[in-house]
Length: 475
Image (cartoon, rainbow, N blue to C red):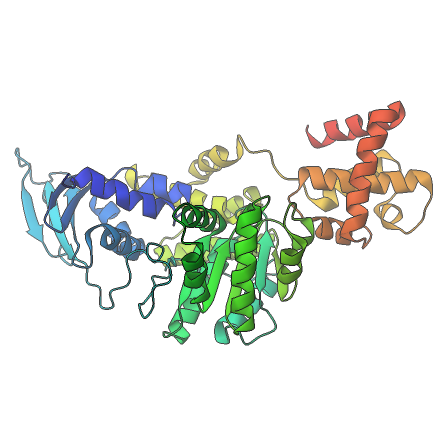
C-alpha cells in the first residue's frame, strides 16, 4: 500500500507529539493540514505567513527529523500558506517562492529542502546488537542548556548536569538521578546534558529513551527470543539517558535486564543519567539492588521555581521568540502559574498565538483569560510552609514549636498532621518534607503518615482534627 500525505504526516505527528509540550502541539501542529505527497516532498498547509515563520524559527529541526524518519534523508517539505488576498484577486493562485521572499498572494508554496549531512540509523531499536553504525540519539534539539535557566530551585541539578556533560563517565555523578514533580524540567535537563555531550564529544554514542519505551522493547525482545541482543545493544551506548525510571516499578524482568545493562555501563566508565518524579527512597516496588545503584552517584532535586526564576523564564522565552510584553503582564503570569514550568511556557505560547491570530495587542485582560484556562480546573498546590502555618494556627502554637524536638503528645500529633498533609497536597519527596518540617528524615515522615491514618480510623477526636484541617486546605 502506497503512502499518502495524510499517513506520512500522521507518522510525523507521532514523533513530534513526543518531543514538545501538549500546548505547543495543539497550537502549532494541530492546525496543519497535509496537502499532497510527491515522491519525497510532503506539502503541508498552514494558516498564515506568521504561522510559517514561527515553524521555521522554532520547529524546523523537529520537522526535519520527523520527516526524515518517515521519508528518508532526501525528504523535502513544502509549505502551502493560506493568506489574505490584499490585491483583490478573485481566484486564489499558487506561487513557488524561496523561503527568504515574501509576497501578497492568496496561497504560497515555500520549498524547504531538508539535507542530512550525517545520515544516522533510522531506528536504533530495530537491530539490537548492531556494530559500527551511528545510532540516532533521540535527543530534542530544543531542550538545551541555553534555555534552561538557573535559579535556586535547580542550581544543584544544573551544575551537576554541566559537570557530567564536560566529563561523561568521569565524575562521581554516575549515575546522575534528576528528580522532582511534573513540569519542572527533568526531561529538558536530561536532553540538555545529552546535547552538550554530543557537541563536545561527537564520537560518543548518546541515547535517550523513556522507561516505558525501554520496557516495551524488552517485552518485544523476549517475544522474539533475542533478549541477549537487546542487552548487547544497550551495552554499546556511551551515555544512556532513561526518562521516568520510576515506571520500572513492579516490572521485575525489565528491572533485572536494566540491572545488568547498568552494571556493564558503570564498570566500563560509561555515563548513566536517570530522571524520576520521586527520590530513590520514595520509589516503591523497585528492587533494592537497583535502588542501591541509583544512590551510587548524585540524586539532584528540581524544586518549584521562585518568583524571580519564573520571571526570568518568561523573559528568556519572550526574548528568544522576539516578542515584547509589558512588565505588569510578565509579573501577572509569574504570580499566577507557580508550580509548573511547562504550564508557564504553554501560557506564554497561547498568549502570543491569541494575540497574533486575532490581531490584538497582548493585554492584561487577555493574559487573565489565558491563565484562567490553565488554573481553572487545576487544584493549586499548597506549599509546605503554608501547611505548617495552618496546622500551627489550628492547634494554637507557633511554627517553631511544631518543628521543635519536643515529644509532648499534642505537639507530636500536630507535627505528624503537617507531614501527612504535606504528602497529600504537595509533590515534594518524603525526604524534602522531613527536611522542611523540623529536619526529620524520610522514615519519620512515612511513620507520621501511617500514624495519622491509624489514629483517624480509631480516634474520633483525632478524626475531627483531620477533617477540619482537610476542609481548610480544600476551601
